[in-house]
Amino acid sequence: MAATMTTKYLEVPGGFVTLSVYGREGEGGIPALYIHGGPGGNKESFRPMAERIAEDRAVYLYDQIGCDEKSHTGEESLWTTDRYVEELNQVIASIGAPKIHLIGRSWGAYLAARHVLDTPQSPAISITMISPLVSTRIWLADAKQRLAELGEGCLEEVELCEREHHFDGYRYQEIIRKYEANFRYRTATVERPGHMATPLKPKSYSGTRVYRHMWGPSEFTCEGTLKDLDITDRLHSIRISVLFVCGEFDQVRQQTCEYYRSLIPGSRMAVIPDASQTSYLEQPNIFYWTLRNFFECF
Image (cartoon, rainbow, N blue to C red; front, top):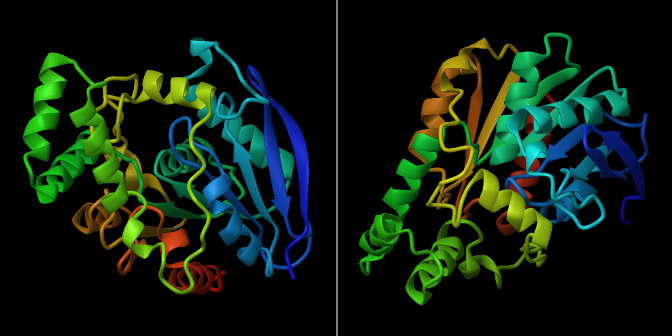
């Protein structure tokens, strides 16, 4: 039986966000909040997993401001890390739960970490960091390693395009497609039994603008405002339970997740086999039970 879903609209600095609630609020286990990646992404890919998790607890998902057409804003002044952290703070406050689990993917993991680090009285009791963006420098180093694994001169082509600042050519776009099919959403897993056949929802026009402004033209080229992002030196101050999750073929490599895990006392790590950055779609059963076992510790 599918979980019930309701929608709320919350005012946040600069506009509003759409908050989806799966399951019944106030019933079951400690609720969970999913924070999508990007910047400029959306919550849609996590929806099938949220419906499954909602069998045990309420699950909240929201699209960050500027990421869907309903909350469209062309105000680049709003596209800052501090404003997105404040937005997350208000979403958590609006939920009003005395305890809550945070699930952050990629950029969403950074927002979750910032919230906990900057909010001593946060109700968050855990963070699940899926393929986390914690340091742009390390993210790009991983990406270059993955490009080298693709062979066929992919790394050299990308570095040439970066030197010439030329990102619209056929070859660069072809490498983006190949990179994503191997390390972001593995096409080899689509026909596997149990796969949640929900394609990634493309970024909206506004979301693409957010992504280009804050990040850049691709996952492996950063020219935006996040180029100097790095909170590795603050991770040791996180005092709640943390679970790192990455796929075997994730663009965030296993070695990187292990390094991040070593920086947070008592944190844990899970590697999802034969999966990439969307392990919750590619290996939903393994991901679900990994998360459920983590939640059952509370």
